[in-house]
Image (tube, rainbow, N blue to C red; front, top):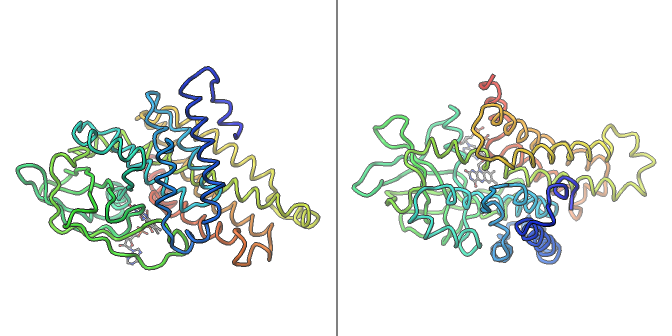
Length: 372
Ligand SMILES: Cc1cc2nc3c(=O)[nH]c(=O)nc-3n(C[C@H](O)[C@H](O)[C@H](O)COP(=O)(O)OP(=O)(O)OC[C@H]3O[C@@H](n4cnc5c(N)ncnc54)[C@H](O)[C@@H]3O)c2cc1C
């Protein structure tokens, strides 16, 4: 267990003991079930069974405890990310849809979906990239809704939603026609006949993430699918959690890059020591990132500007550390990391995803500039 997580564990607390047990289950399942299939996932296999299996052991419930400390959930995704960024991202999708349901005031929706999503019985994701970019003036809302007696009728197309399939759900936001500034956050049931999932063209990596373009053609969103109306106050409540949970992907990937550097040190250390970045440098960088993220993760409902700035800066640091770590791991591994059979080239391809998934590096820099 990394030092930053160990320091936080209170051996007398039942909650901490439970979280520690879930984390060791995730580690065992990652070694036993996930590690042997990472190449298949890299080539497009969607690991639904693995997600359901860790879900049944509590992997998507750690952030539901009364203290709402997100640290253990982040550590769970980091453990998965040490082996596979795609699966760590899918675990983030699942943890995030649970975070949405948990924070909704809609009791009927919670009764229907919270248990099922948090145990992995229903898998799901989040289509918030377009709304998040729209909220920060980067693009316009792609989903539009019209009022009805019991909700809305929604139409439009989201270009990428991950961890979905024909019987999955995801959370998203649409803009209400004729009511500028009025947005609504809802769950979408992919089994609804008004929803079409279209396969995406192949990516650089992350092809096994169950990612589809989603078309909504007059989708009826009744009141029992509404997470928040209006969406904005609710978004302010969930936004730090949404972003902080993404840190698990970065931390896991960087830890594996560090491991690769160390693996080649016995045979290549005599020449690798001339490289600009050494394992100790990366170790310090990841320790600083983990400490900051875990501190922020204790208070995800803080809505102060100072806290929000730290969250954005930590997210930016995670994306930049991922790309840098994968780059330096490749320089340390050299030709042995450049062959297809070595994980170093997969980690390099995966690393860019952390920096481009919403909020992407460019959006984070825009957000920081606007906070100034
Ligand atoms: C593997 C993968 C999984 C993703 N999963 C999710 C998810 O689960 N939920 C979610 O909300 N978002 C998801 N996204 C979207 C992601 O979060 C970003 O929003 C997306 O990568 C675009 O960000 P950007 O910063 O490049 O946007 P910008 O640079 O602002 O550009 C985005 C715009 O460019 C256009 N565009 C970009 N690529 C293409 C293309 N190939 N063809 C046509 N137009 C294009 C589109 O209009 C798009 O809105 C995923 C993306 C990828 C690559």
